[in-house]
Image: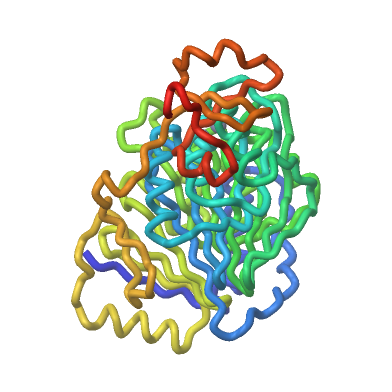
Length: 402
Ligand SMILES: [Zn+2]
Ligand SMILES: [Zn+2]
């Protein structure tokens, strides 16, 4: 079924206060209504385009952002998604990631990032912590060290450029709970913006509200896979997203997404996309208009009336549904756009665990007989493929021949 809906930015702006008021009534909270409208964001250059792919990684999070030839990865799914992340970058020919963000240390967020860092190098790798007691995190930290200069804990207010878009850190490490350590960040592209919250729960939402950060965003990556512990009314009232994306696995054991946040999002007039139903969700922004495409050919356009809106309406009028796919492909069929059908497995160099001698720069099979001789201080491990190790200046051990 082809679904198309066009919302006018002007209409949105004028109804914003009313929606906020409705939320206040519903939540029975402070009668403080009509949040101040944000200052007009800087316009983006003609032709600038931001694409945000919310990858379908099941009960986990992963979003790949591309803007004017620069790329950024926010989370990488579970350990088992390493290959999918690797393949996605390979298909797109992305060998350089300007930024990689592990929103927090849980495996369903950082587990697949070694896959990304096995294929690509990164300018900076951000995480709220540099240490966490899990094998998945140690793999991530090691790859970050080898391919991205090591883990960096950012500060609130830090800004990074991604082509014509700006990435701003709004909050992190808001509580003892690992989920509340999540990096909250906003990506702004002209009038369109995306708020990423990792698994932030109420404590982190309240902390970023208290900080006075400008939270309003066009698209909200819903916190913690749609758990009822996230997406509180006060937070939602500040964000007032038009589109909500929930990254969640079908029939997951947590029963995510929970009903309460879904109904809060509906109350806010949000159009909800979920990766368990929609597959990979692709958002495109030209700085004024946002288009959302899903695997079943559904699309949604949000933004100003005019060319983009009419073009989208014309598309609907043609009555030709897009072919159903595992994940959407760009209608404009750009060069290098990935086919979301999985490529044959043999295209992938195998990823495995190697033992390293960081002093002699030799790498070994994990069961190499000579490995006992490596002192603890020089001993390291690497999960990835051997070509990367060779590229990093490591030589294979002559006896175990890894
Ligand atoms: Zn999670
Ligand atoms: Zn988590």
